[in-house]
Length: 234
Image (cartoon, rainbow, N blue to C red; front, side, top):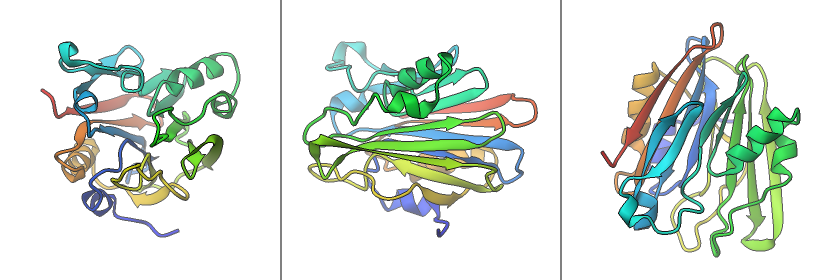
């Protein structure tokens, strides 16, 4: 698999939608997590990331303008024991509950499918990062926008290479309906510290459509972490 330049990938795509990056820092000492949201509607754009006790949540920037919260208000990141979950919807809680009960993330996601937002049927993308830096990614999507068929794909990465990661998003680009992500997660190069990486991602995302970005580096030896939140609405 070719390693792509994530900066160019995002700069050339006005609407990848929501995206997850998991990988390992150039130094090899940290697990790397990034998650962003974008929006075309006023309701989707009226959001910010805020910190919670175990991760982050989406909130309405202006509560008076909040319309339907069902698919836009959720916890994208939650920590359960020594695992970090990151997803684009309320399946974060489904995975969390399964892990607490002693099951795996696959067990949780077999109960879920793509979002019911016809005609897009937005894929649910999810990731889990282990204490040692191994990580998993998945995508649940319709078959060619057929809501009667849910395709579930799972990808697992052990002993990640320093300076490399994988990227998955909800969409391939803009459109009506929005075209779902296709293929395996894309292998990308990871460069710089948390601020260099975070600033690059934030600047590469389409300025009109980007809403929020979360980046976390987790030290694999100590478990200590640093996080950054970028919100267009401030």
